[in-house]
Amino acid sequence: MEEKESGGGEGGEGGFYRSAKRRRTEEEEEEAGARDLEEGEEKEEETGSAEEDAAGSGCNDSRSRRRKDSHLIPPSPVVHVRGLCDAVVEADLVEVLEKFGTICYVMMMPFKRQALVEFDSLESAERCVRSGGSEPVFIANQQAFFNFSTSQRITRPTNSDDPTSKNKVLLLSIQNPLYPISTDVLYTVCNPVGNVQRIVIFKRNGIQAMVEFQSVEDAQKAKMALNGADIYSGCCTLKIEYARPNRLNVVRNDTSSWDYTKPFLLHRDRAKGRQRQAILGEHPSNGYGPHCPLLPLPPNSRYRRSHEPVPELVSYKQLVPKTFSSTVPSGLLASSAVAMVSGLHPNKMNCSRLFNLFCLYGNVEKVKFMKSVPGTALVEMADEYAVDRAVTHLNGTKVFGKKLNVCVSRQQAVIPSQVFELADGSSSYQDFSLTRNNRFSSTHSHRNIIQPPTAVLHFYNAPPTLNQQQLLKFCSEHNAPAFTKYKVFDAKPSSKTLSGLLEFDCKTAAVEALIVLNHHQFRIAGSSNPFTIKLCFSTSTHL
Image (tube, rainbow, N blue to C red; front, side):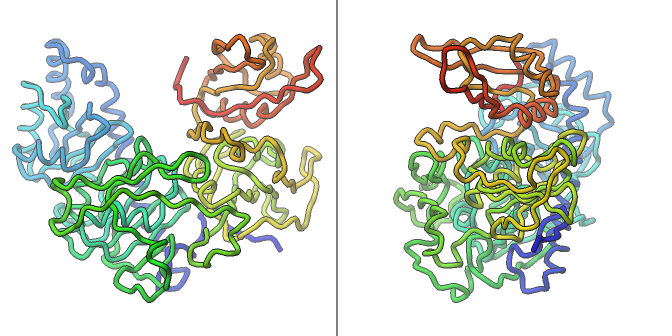
C-alpha cells in the first residue's frame, strides 16, 4: 500500500515523550527559526557583497572607500564582519571584539566567511567600526573588515525580547554534511566542552540537532567554542543558535536520540557505542573510503573542561553493510534508507532521470512514482547516510520550473505495488540494484565528488573523439539546456576516454542537463562497446 506523505517530512524522529503531532510542531518551529536566520543572512549579504572588493585589499584607497561606505548605512548595534578565515569560531570573534563593548549575540556565516556581531549599545558598535576603519583588526591572524549591519538586531530562534537571553539547549544546523551525523558524533564533539544531557537529531530539510547541556553556562561555552567549526575537515560545518525548548524529552537511546542521564533506555555494548573522544579528524570511514582516525582536543585547549581526560586516538566504526542489517540490534539501524521526492514535473521526470540525479549521493536501489500523489516518488538508497546527503544537497533545487522537496520517508523499503505508466510511456517503478551505473560499489568509489548542484558539470568516460560541436548537438537532440563554455582535460597518452567541464548559464540549467544526459551511450566506429558518458557537479564555480 502506498504511503501518503506531505512535503514537510515525518514527525517520528527524535523520540520525544509527547505525541507525534506535538513533536512535529516543535521541530517545525525550530526550522522556522532557522529559516528566519537564513533570511537575515541574505539581507546582510545584499549590503555586504557590494563591498567585497574593498574587503579584499589592504591598500589605503580601499580603506578610505570602506570608511566612506560605512557612513552610507545608518549606525546599528549590529556589526557586519567580513574577510574571516575558515578556521574562525565564535570565541575568536568575542576574544578580539569584546574590548569595544559587551557582545550580546553572534551569528556565524561560515561558508561566506562572515559574521554578525550584536553589541549591547550603539556606542560599542561605532567604536568597533571606527577602529576597523582606522587600523587593521586581526581575527585568528587574518585581517577582518567591519561595517554597520542593515539590521538593528539579530533574529534569534527563541524570538525573545531580552537580547541577552540564553538557553541550555542549543540548536545545531550541520551544513554540508558529507559524512554520517549521529548522537555518538555530536556527543564526541560537544561533551568535552560542557556536560551533555540529551541529544535529539531530526533529518528532513537538511540535518539539525538539539543538544541539551547541564547548565546555561555549559551551553554558552559550547556555542562559543564550536559555532562555525567543522566537525570534519572542510565539511559538516556547525551553525549554532539557542533553541526554543529548555528541555528535551527522549524515549529511546539510539543514533538519532539519546538521554545520557538514563542509560537504561537502551542497553548496548558500550565498547561499540559512545566514546568520550573529542574533536574529529579528517573524515570517518563510511565504507566508501579509507579509515581515518578521530583526533582528541589538545590537552591545553581553553575549551576543554579541566577534568576531561585526554583520550587515545580511536577509529570511526565501519558502517554496517545493508546486506547484514538483519544481524544488528534494532536500536543501531538507520531510521530509513528511503527518500520521498515531491514537486516533480509530471511530463519530464521518470525513474531513470531520478536515478541520474540521486546516484551522485549514494547507490540507488529502487525508484517508484506514487499513483495516489502525482508528482511524488520514493527513492530507496543503499543506506540512510546516502539519503541524508541527498536531502541536504537536493532539497529546494529547481528542476523544470518546479521546486523539489526531498525528505526522509517513513517507509523502510520501496515495494513495487500499483505499477502504472508515466506520461512518457515508461514504467512508474524501476529496480536499479544491479545497474553498473551505481557509483559507490567499486574500489574507486572514494573518488566520487559529493557536491551540491552547481552551474558547472564534470563529464568523464566520454569517447576520445567527442568534440564540442558533437556535444552541443547531443544537448539539442535531447532537449537539454546547452552549455556556454567547454573545457577538456589533458589526457594521458594511454587514456581511452575523454573528460572535462561544461559550464551552463545557471545552476538550474546544469541540473536539468545532468538529469537528461547522464548515462547516455555513445557508439563510435571501430568500437564494439558503447561509451556511457557520466556527469556530476563540479567543485569549480566557473571556467
